[in-house]
Length: 339
Ligand SMILES: *[C@@H]1O[C@H](CO)[C@@H](O)[C@H](O)[C@H]1NC(C)=O
Ligand SMILES: *[C@@H]1O[C@H](CO)[C@@H](O)[C@H](O)[C@H]1NC(C)=O
Ligand SMILES: *[C@@H]1O[C@H](CO)[C@@H](O)[C@H](O)[C@H]1NC(C)=O
Image (cartoon, rainbow, N blue to C red; front, side, top):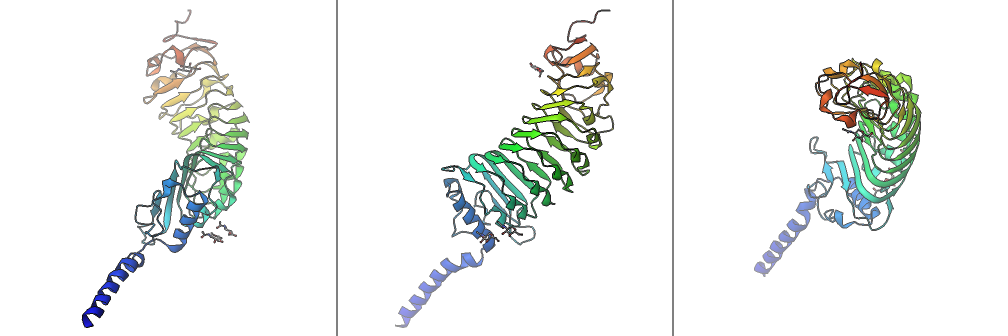
């Protein structure tokens, strides 16, 4: 009898150890776990997320795309990265994502079946620093409410189906480093307010949209490292992005209708890519181009440029196609200038 009860005791001990020790030591915050499981459900339980096992700790490093905060030992979910989800039908951005209130990094990528608008409730993520929604079917306007997430550093909404204007209020984000909205169907002009982005702001990429009109002259205040406005319907003066005192590395303005005198622009010594192809840019190429040590990409073809191509530096390393189809550009690598 005594033997029997000690056996039971042992059995009980084994059972309790197996059942309770893991959950006692579970680091995952119960609110976060509940939200994650709800998110999975809202996504139609994709097989990609089969590692999100409710019986396991969401902070065990095995939940695909989930990272918890181990630095402050609070173990709140700080990163959610969902990539190439196998959604069985078109579904919206999961409404429970804003419940992960400690998120600083949100990535939703390469999921064409993710559709519908960016929900305004995303503004509840008051610790969000990086927002990446790329290569999805997400549509509608870019919500102005994003400007309420004061912690935002980077907003990347590349290659979706977004429409409507650029939200003017984004320039009020105090820590913003960059916005990339390439490959959507955005319309309208670049807002005047974009001249008041904070000092930290260095990346503006809006290529392959339907933006039109002139660049506000006040944007000359910006010191961008990287500007890409290719393949829009922008016009007028884009010399605001140039300047010898700026630390600009890439200026990509091809396939628009820009018209300004290239001979008058100042050149950042850090410039490594200058693509102005297919515009209506006029004047003579500045001799300063020969001083650019890092120039790797250069194309001024299909403009209205004239005069001699400055000789020296890296300029003759680019072939004729970088200079072709201008009004009267001459000299190596094109034909010599007539005396
Ligand atoms: C998400 O937050 C809302 C509002 O606070 C709450 O009603 C809802 O129950 C939460 N959902 C989950 C899955 O935690
Ligand atoms: C977002 O916050 C608002 C008010 O702060 C609240 O009413 C709403 O339930 C929250 N939504 C989510 C999804 O947490
Ligand atoms: C420059 O652009 C033209 C299109 O206008 C293109 O045909 C050519 O291949 C480009 N050259 C280089 C070197 O990128």
